[in-house]
Amino acid sequence: MKHVGCVNQMDATMDTRTVTTLDDSELVRACMAGDDDAFDELVKRTRGAAYSLAFRYTQDAHTALDVVQEAYIKLYNFLPKWNFSCRAQTWLYRVVTNLCIDQRRRNSKRLILMEDWTDRSADSIASNDVAPGHDLQRAEWRAEIDQAILALPERMQAAFRMKYVGGLSYKEIAAVQECSVGTVKAAIFQAASKLRLQFSKQEIIR
Image 1 (tube, rainbow, N blue to C red):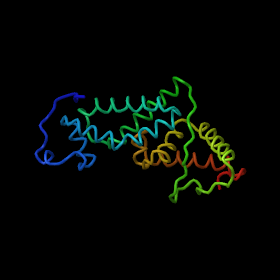
Image 2: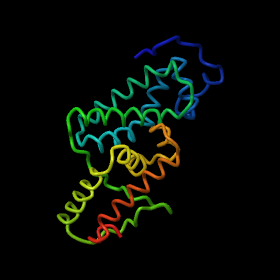
Image 3: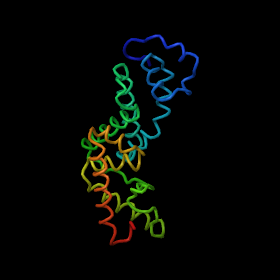
Image 4: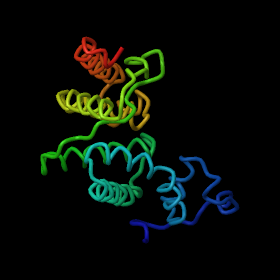
């Protein structure tokens, strides 16, 4: 794969370093300069999280792979115009999220339950403690949470997943959704409150 746009001569200081030693910003600059190895490294650093997010949305391995592949093609084609206004990972997550939403609208597929959507910080929705039970009870619990998350507004769902599946910061989620950090925090807090309220009487979340 050859990069779109002019291929510039790499900076001398960059030539003496392998792509694995570059930080994210330097890696993007190397990609912009036409270094295909740098793009491969960028993919290696981000593909796991990108695929995880896509799979949670689509609930289908093949569809998730297609989404991620399309997202990387978009990233590759956009690199010649990169302006460093955000991290490459943030931009990629935005594209993956939008592609998944488009996919959902086209196919009307159900979103998948996140396996570990509970934060461990002071902003935690609830503790990770789940009432003990058999596998069947756990599966039923997951299905109930899945349905509850599906009932959330679309942007609220997206913010919630990016926080608890993708592990993005509030600032990164705000960049993806093109809104303020305060808006993201409010959306995630509201989502948590809705879920806690729905399940508190059942002692599923406590």
